[in-house]
Length: 309
Image (tube, rainbow, N blue to C red):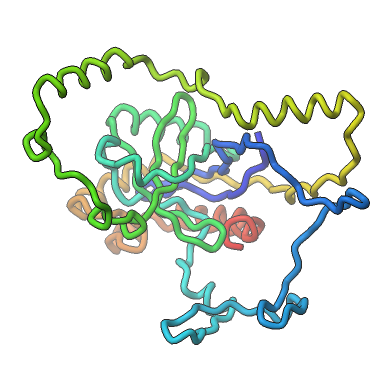
């Protein structure tokens, strides 16, 4: 398992579940490096001014957004950071919905969530509650200076987080030249539909992902192995490892879970958060809130680079 790429907490009502985020997928295609054929030195990328072709220093690079008139609006790093939510170490659940309501077109990238500190019990509680309800959580999370919509779902012993595409990122099919919906609109014969349906059913089988493989990458690896065995391999310097991550802290659970249920009823189904709680709830939750703030500060301060940069 690779190193954690993000550490923070799942916000579940007034409860925080400290977790570490790990990629659940991996690239298996063959990675071709650029090399100098004269010396086998790795070839890197330079920062080049596209108009002059000259290399420029990192300090002279700013971030700009191109406008319709080809001019740019330049934004500083401070301005960009100020535009993001204040809390960047929280997976904030906003609602629970049936999994079947989400089209696969919205699915982007899967991650595993691992409990940190002594959060095993509350992690298991959230996992089992979601599974028993037959729902998945819809949450927001900020990673790498970008806010993501995400689905939180149980997967055997793990909680998984799948980033989702925003609705405006899915293109409208109206832009495509597609045949109309329905059998009659396409003048399909009953016999044709019957035979096509029969063929589909004959090809139906149980989903076994291990039966499918990337044949191109396998062929390339076999070719590389043969050439290496024949003594045709040359030394290339390895890439550097990612920086290590520290552990996060953990906070208390039971009282917050009870308060979350009370606040949820008052909100009549609206999203629950500590900032929208009643004065009485805020007062009673102060000790836990101080612990949550300490946990977030301890984990978030150390891992700001992983989650927000």
